[in-house]
Image (tube, rainbow, N blue to C red; front, side):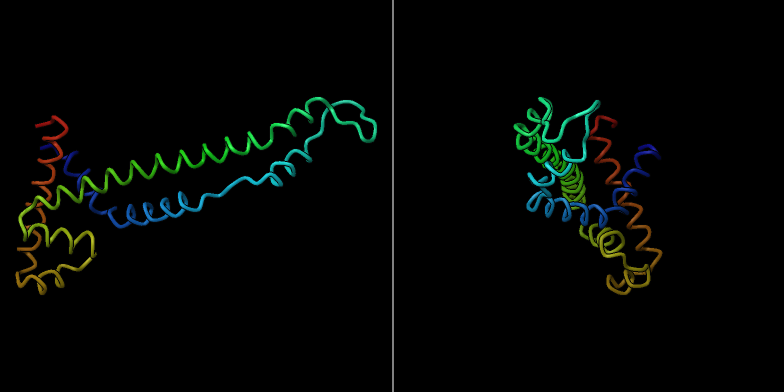
Length: 160
């Protein structure tokens, strides 16, 4: 077990709540994606101007081409945004689900301490009171749990 692996596990546990919030936000964005509307695309095109003199009412071939394809471009941009959100969401959910599963494999006291320390953000005094143990014992249980989690991660990543 390396110190680097242990530090990684601690970071995962400490950022658990932040990842939960990000997952919730990405789920919302995936269900309610921001779309580039045809009007937004046309407004963006109307601010463009070509080179050279143009007579009033003149529409260049480029403008016609863009106008005919604006919906296709808007659809591509919208799909690209949705794909990026889905990719981020899949990565975060995989990381979060893996951590939750590994924590579920710990002994019951270790699970309880990990949840109280990292998920519920309780103080050592609160943890000791809830579990009817000394704060020092709670810290030792936490340390043992982190060691076990590190071993699990190392094993599955081939670092055993």
